[in-house]
Length: 118
Length: 111
Image 1: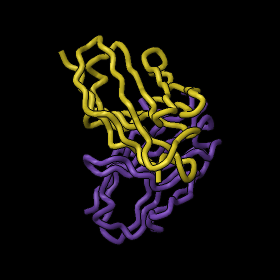
Image 2 (image 1 turned 90 degrees about the vertical axis):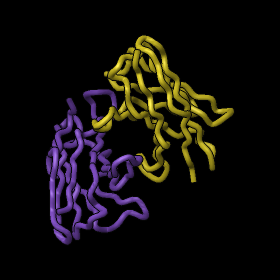
Image 3 (image 1 turned 45 degrees about the vertical axis):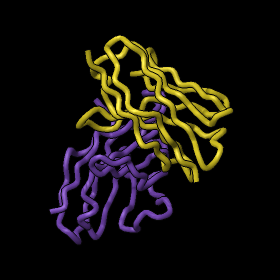
Image 4 (image 1 turned 180 degrees about the horizontal axis):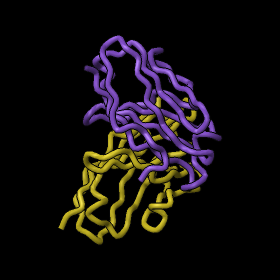
């Protein structure tokens, strides 16, 4: 069974960049689409985009096209999500997730808490 | 502002049935079968409850069911239990924002 393990919490200053990792364990995830979802404090879920973990192909939500970059390193079963020019409203819990058994996001990482504050 | 509209809250008593709606358009819910539903308890990771409009992942209770009518998808929970109290989100493929979009979420309260 695939498990996704994310990097630890981050505190960043406005204008800085952030890079969060998501590593698969239990199974190679080459070829899976890894989605990134974020949730601001007290708010709902927001889809950010996906990356094909094998080809590196990406598809970003319109709201994030200018500031988000997703990359993959198949040698270590890890994908990365980088957000540039951080703002205070980027403060959120960031999740990676994938669809293993069907078309729904059935496997999720534990989440990475990101705080953007001066 | 989400392209998918969910009621902010719904409530029901134990044993009752409730339905949470997810209203979209012909650019998303009304046309494509990539509709899924997620349950999220406070401080927990979202859990997939329904995918492809009505399919249930293994391990999800048969009390949970999904459907669609026109541009609105629905999640029905029958035989409501205290443990069902959580936030619920729909997720759909959309042609208007590059692939997927979540609904705003619905807080379910079990009275």
